[in-house]
Amino acid sequence: IPEVTDLDYVNLTTHADTFGIDPVPISWAHPDPLVRGPVICTVRHFNQRNAIGAHSGSYCIYTGLAVAAGKLSPEYVPNLKLTSPVFKIGPYPSWYDPKKIASID
Image (cartoon, rainbow, N blue to C red; front, top):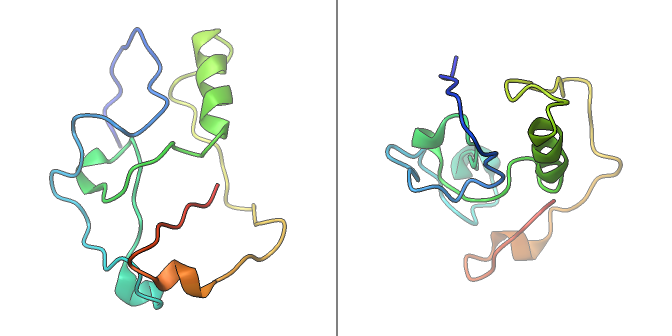
């Protein structure tokens, strides 16, 4: 369980100074996800992070506002076990080109 500390601000992105002390290895652009490895850009386990980005995309803005307004506990973790994409996207050949960057939100 991650350590929770009292903060007087809400961190909306994972662009902190503690990037990847012991990041999980990743082979960018490999078409096989089992070979590529996981893309990790979490704020909860920053030592393993191997990518940067906003946690939960634009949803993090609404979460940050709710926490700042005192309407949501900063310790709240949504249960996403029964969620799925609205429709299937990709994969596309550009996702496996190491000269391009893929961004999904």
